[in-house]
Length: 463
Image (tube, rainbow, N blue to C red; front, side):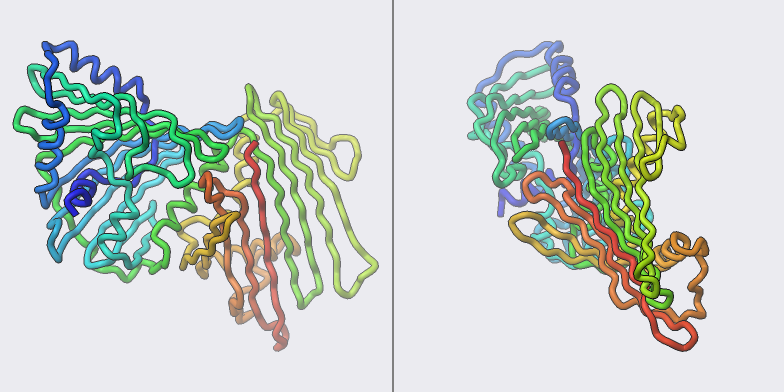
């Protein structure tokens, strides 16, 4: 329990990437002050860690940076999180987290408050809540940054004119709170700054490991505030959507941003839209290959098939090919000469590509519930959509087939029958491998019940 309290104090779930060079520069600056080696650095550190363990109200700021390399893709994540713990060890313990998370250039704001076995979560402007014991909530976090001296070949200490600097070198294995199942350890090192009253002021830890095809480097830097923040619980929770999985929203956002950051990826998209009342069906297949390098090279092949139940022998099928290279974009239909051949800015093409890659990944504000399913190949997150998202899909289907988004208005007496969206995550790397939408609704036309189907799925391969 004592070690858990230590972990609680210095905790956070941020995965980001802070430059090792930057931290080394920081500590080099400290060493330019008058300093001298000290003995028993591990004992001084243990005393500071124990002092932290006795605190029942504390605030820390955690900066985390993560660099993930998989094949030809480099993914950067960073966050800065402020975490406050209050009434630790009592029946009224609380915890509050405010975080700004960056995936490349995409910024996501998370705000969480834990109180009475309930977590209130705001992601950007969408509010969620879920039930969780305090112990399980802590297990969901990554408890940085109390280091275990026994995991390093060398622990050195310096006494400067202002504080103690403790350095942990030659890591032999990861710290327990950051170790990934099935990963291969590469290197680790850390450091801590302690004042002369044995108060831990800051800590830093860097770990590099291999996880399946991905090599990951993570750096955590923690600063401890002497004046803890107060914690407030939402007065009204009526607008908080209750969900069943604590990490579902964060994983949804991360998956979308991994796709947006990808530099070498292939994807296949399939969809089907069917109006039973009219017998009209549209099936579309899109194959995407994209590689960044010095400039974006993108190939997109789209096959569209239109059929009608009442005209079985009439099938309209079209093939479109789009190529983008060296800022030159061309598009051709059905094997004919390019109908479009023009220059397009690389950023504009990247935005077009991103829209295709994330077209079946839900936005948090459209989620009304989350469930999970798991096997050896993937972890599946199943998201139920809101009425607002159902309206969007219905209007989009009407616009695609009939160029009339309002074809089915409120007078159609629409009833949703099936509405699940999914996101499959590779359990070894944490990267998305597939996503999809399945929506079926029943409505009345001329007094007769009929159905609308909107289904889409997409697979991803990082290369």
